[in-house]
Amino acid sequence: MRSELQVDRAVEQYADMIRRICLYHLKNPTDMEDVFQTVFLKYLLYEGSFEGPEHEKAWFIRVTLNACKDYLKSFFRHSALPLEELAEKAASIPPEQHEVLDAVLALPAKYKDAIYLHYYEGYSAAEIGRILGKKENTVFSLLSRGRTMLKEALGGDR
Image (cartoon, rainbow, N blue to C red; front, side, top):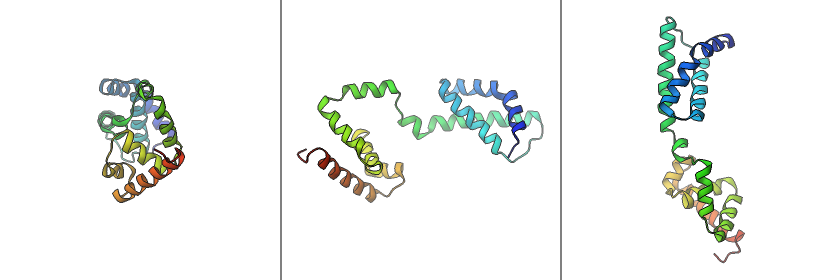
């Protein structure tokens, strides 16, 4: 692990270059900051040595490019919605369905996640299993128990 002095020097020396590379690839200042932090965390934890300043600079460029690519491919980036879009989605839900959504959000986390991913995001049980790190049959059980809890919460007539 590198010392605080080494990391501070590297941040001073390479910060502008890394930000430019990130902004060019990600086109979003918030995402750029996320990847920027990731790059310097990798530097902090990197235990190898560099042959010289050019080798270190090349390492930073390669790590930054790879971190940008990883970020663009990440599950979070593809499944996250901007708050504005989420507000639009919520506004498009008929008032009678707000009660159902509130009931879903009140479920314990393991049931809420499965129900939400299945009914609101359209994932299959197998996909939910991969996302949550659970077996497909476990997801079916979570969905079944979650539906039972929803029935009770909503008065049993739905």
